[in-house]
Every structure is written in C-alpha cells, then in structure tokens.
Image 1 (cartoon, rainbow, N blue to C red):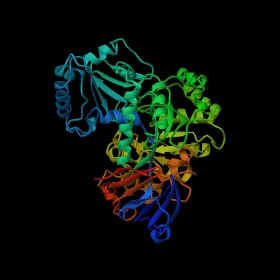
Image 2 (image 1 turned 30 degrees about the horizontal axis):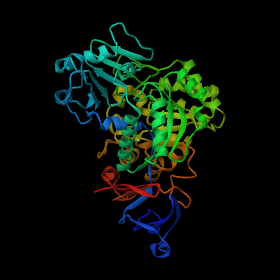
Image 3 (image 1 turned 90 degrees about the vertical axis):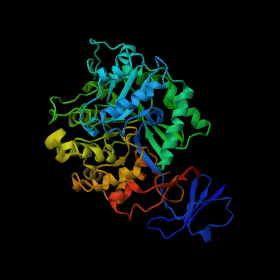
Image 4 (image 1 turned 60 degrees about the vertical axis):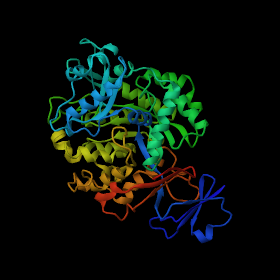
Length: 517
C-alpha cells in the first residue's frame, strides 16, 4: 500500500512530502511529484517531521505499572505523600496492597524519607510499599515487611534493610516485590500496552527495555507476553529487550532452554544481557571509589568482581553482548575490569555501560580503548545538577561527560523511565543546556551537546545500539516508516524552551498511533 505524508516540514530539506510503501520510506520529495497512485494520505499539518524517538534505556513494564499505581513524583512535602496514601487506603479492602512510586526526598521542603512508623499510623492491615523515584530504595510499613518475611535478622547480598525505618535498598527490594500478588500473563500484556501508549504520546516508536524481572520473579511470563503481543499485531513500539537476570542461574536456564533460537523480528527482539551493577546517586547506593562527600558511605555493588566477570564472559560467548548499569565510579572500575578481561577487541557485540554518571578522567581512556557503547540519560541533569557537587565533591568536575564520551565512543540517550518521565524533548534540552529544565544554570557547560547531536542520540544512535542503524533512525529511503511530528522546530527554538514543544502525531510502521487532540 502507498501512503503519502503531506504538508511535512523537514529540517534542512526543501521537501514537503514522504511517500511510504507499506511500512517503509520509498521517497522524500514534493507533494505534486509524489501524489500519484497513492492509497492513503496522512496530513501532518505543517508539523516538524523527525525519525521516531528511540529511548535506548527504559523499563516498559515499569512504565505501565507506574501509570497504574499511586504516583508520588509531584509531591513537595512528606505530608503530601502521606495524604495520597491515606486517600488510596480509603478505597482498598483489608489486605490489599498500596503501591506508590516517584517520591524524592530532595524535592521536599524538609529533606527526609518516609518511615515505617508514619506508614503504620495510616494502616496496619494494608501492606504499603513506596518506591523512591530511582527505584533503588523503597519504604514499607510493618504489614508489607511481614508479608515479605523480613525481620530484624534478615540480610540480603547486594542489598540493605533498615528494619526500624522500613527502608529497603537494592537487592532487598526484590523480597518486597516477590510478596506482591502474582501477575498473570494477561496482566502483563495490559501493562505493556499501557506503557506503549505512554511512549507514543511522547513520540517514541522504539525502545530498549528491561522487563524480565521488573514485576515477576522470572522471565518466562514477560517474554511470552511480548512475543504474543507481537504475533497479535498489538505492539505500537519496536522493542529491543535488554535481558536482565538477577542471578546467573536464571541466565543459564535461559540459555539451556534455547530461547536465543527465537531472537525475534523488527517489532520485538532479544537484545543484550542486562546487569544492574550498583544503585543510584539520589539514594547514595551507587558505588563510589571513595565515600560520598555528604555521607559516611561509599554505596554498594550488587555483584562481586567474579560475578561481573561471568556476566560479561557469557555475553561474549553467546554473541549477545552485556550492558551494565553503572552510576558510581567505583562500580565503573569493577565493570571496566570485567570488560578488559573478556570483551572481544573492537567490541563487535556492542557491549556497553548504562548511565555512566560519576566518572574520572582515567576511566575515559579505558572506555575508548574498549569501544564500549554508552547509554546516557541526559534528563538526569534536570535534578542531578542541583545535588551532584555536594554529593560527590571533586568528582563532579569530571562527571556526566556526554560530549567527551561522544567524541571517544558511541552514545545513545534514554529516560530510564519510570525513574524519569518519557519525555525525549526534555532529555534533548538537558543535553544542550546542561541545566535544570527551563533555567540557565549550566553544570559543566563544556560537556553540552549540539542540537543535532542531542537529536541523533534519541534517533540514529539508539538504532546503532541495537544493530538496527540500517533500518531506522533516519529519514531516508528504505528506512522503516516510524516518525514523530512536532509543533515547533527544535533546531530553531531557544534551547531552554525545547521541553515546551508538543508531540502532534506519532506514526509507527506507517500508521498513526497517536494524535494530539
């Protein structure tokens, strides 16, 4: 089928129409020249047409679950959090879980965490779990800890439990998750579709997502849910699944089951092995090479050096590659050690590092030599530029080094949603301004990207990360017909106003999947 996108504005190109043949771009030209034997028209109404955005690191099931849960990201006081929990409790039957996410103690008028004691005052019959925005810490009431079988004596490798306050961190959060009522495959499919709808509203047509153990104990149900939705034609995003396994035994089971014999297609396919190496900066659980400047802790690694080695080694042997969540420079030392031992020269499997936040100058040379792909989250600048210096001291002078990384290796961008909103234009703005959204208080302005580099990081660079640069990420003949249509041109508006640009339309596989009302 021939479809013609008309009334297009394409930056730097004096053409006004894009001809599609089925789900691919056939030609970019003028309406009068292409308006022949066309079966269907899509009028983009003089919108700015870009390749569909590619969020190269996020959590699709987490997004679907987040929009279905108690949302705490806009709370400016601890009392606002508690008020939302009280309201939710009024609508729950005894024993039903109250699950919320998004609070950030640094955004409160008084910097303090929720506590078990305060949550117990709200209810002792409903379990409560309130996860911090980063996902690396959660506060629970007594009932939730009881259902998770957490006592004063409970310890977890790679995690931490403060029983008196109800705060659980890193691997210990899994104990809480496993106490939640089990989800069915149909539940997961519903959440996946909700997550994709959120993506489409933000102009996203491709994602690289981490879902295997985000809501379930093992990977089978999420994998089946994705494959079935793909076969049923119900996907509105292309998914490259970053395959996370909490323990090596699960990865070995995955291999023994020969899951890699069905790596997928252009809509859903299996990507690299994913490992969460350490925690977050906000929760002070990211592993530093020396203590935090504002706390008597250096954070924690979720795995030993030998375990990191094994994940990387298996990724190379399987041809999958391995990507590792690495926020602290101490964790980055460990991860680079593993890649130096086992990464194939030239990095043909495109292994990489997710986040690459707190870094030292000596580490950039190691990353460059290994040719590791870096999955950055420029949107983190919005919040982190306000706290990074007080949190890590002198390391702030060499961190969030987007330009340095781009000049020495390959870099793609993402949101890590639901940690941050699915807002690519916000990420593009932060990559350029290096500032809090809408403000002009740059942090390390010398590491700013140009507008072209920032947009590339959300389009063609993401396609490179998943070995799909020959089929998507650019407006060229032969590329898949995935587009975002904007109401303003990000190349020409003031950088600090890019976040105000609206998505008018999202086109996936040649079909409109979102249109702003």
